[in-house]
Image (cartoon, rainbow, N blue to C red; front, top):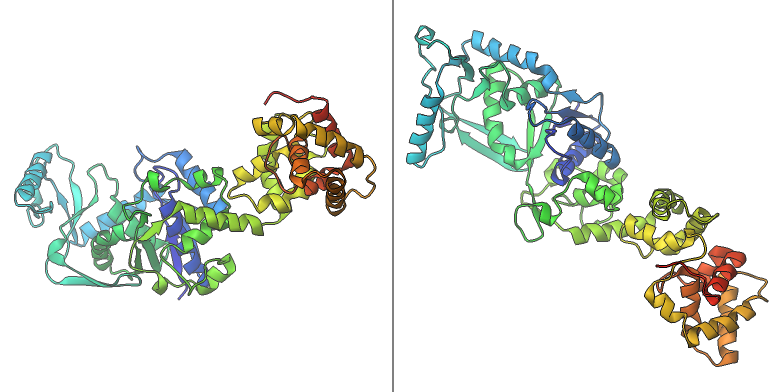
Length: 472
């Protein structure tokens, strides 16, 4: 048997972080077993389904690297097939037309509420003669659910779960306007797509027992189910926007790397020993549904941020430069220095060690790419006043004689200058950093000088000495 999994989001919003984890687990299980992973857009709710949401889901999936087999399937486009199955069940006597009026259904609802019970259709039209049907009412089609016994599913995550058929009413499978309900459409699509494993959130567990009624009535093979616990916030409460329950595109825009998000989502409810850093290849090799925990996993933005910092440090300098340069170029608005991109690339090794996300990385790299003269922040201006500017002026004269412009040699030159003038290194480095970067924070100042080269470094120092700066 070839394993077939699917991810089936509703395009009523963007790809939620919880949905992304569901997609990841489906993807990994399919790849682990050598099977197929499919994407279905459940867009039958035409009022709430939006094309920009479909686009965002697909974009988010691609950004995470969760490639699916075949083309995305639109559930709405299969409405005729869903209706066909409903009418087949009707013809076989396994479903029936229900002519209940809104008033009758409301009365049933109120009665159940008064008894403190959930609303269950009472089967009013289950065995009633259709000749009694009122005029002017478009009937729905309800399935004839089993009335005795029980259904047990062997869930790959939750274990053995049993529900009595007395808990399942004759639910609607086709509305009065001929459109399918979610319960019918999901089952028909999963069957026709050959889905063997349904991996989804445990909020669908009660739906599963209803859907089993359709599988049984049609005589179709039932898939294996695996219901994942939902995500909670770090405080143990239901995940919400205040916990970081955002669309995947928000994490991208906040500067997270896709491999960091994938790794973090993987570890939410699944684990492989004490391994924290897990590559895509390792995840495919190790992932199994039986290792997914039953308890709700807690989403922690701080842990995701820490993991992201690790992946930034591990990423290649070329890739990070490619990713940060558009942010830098946009910020500088056409005023990037000639050679600025090359300086960012050359300085990336130290820059990425300090960054927690790509936004921070771009901001910290900006000084390399900035066209002269630089603007100065308040702390840089303070470093370039009084004693600081005098020390910089004297050291500038020494730098004119340096022929081997490397970080190591520049550091040695500064130490010798400090010794000769009886000035502490910090009193030299602080104004030097201010002149070179316009800030008081940067990688090692002699590394910065090496990256910028002699001409640019001396030019920036001369600008500072001559008071040539832009307004910050």
